[in-house]
Length: 118
Image (cartoon, rainbow, N blue to C red):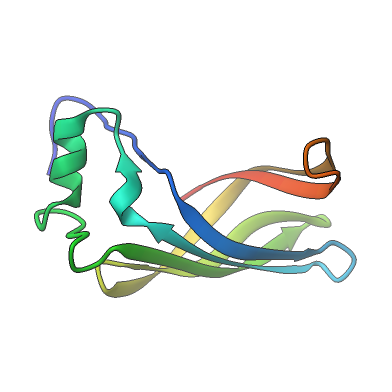
């Protein structure tokens, strides 16, 4: 698959649990993504992505990522895990570009956020 442009999409609905213990330098990720909510910002591309040519969301409506945080200099630097997509599980590591925790003004409790790629 390829073309003239690089398409980026997002999955609009996911659920999961992320555990993080800075003192113990440990953490884990378990996220289930609703592949029926994939969105490239173009209806034709969305339909193609959901078809059996690509993600076959009729037969595989979810994807799952499970992994463990890897720490470097006391901070999470990577998630080493496995992605199950289209019924196939493969190892996928995510590089954490930024990670921070702070008081969340809407949830009124401490929360963490990250930007990762892989």
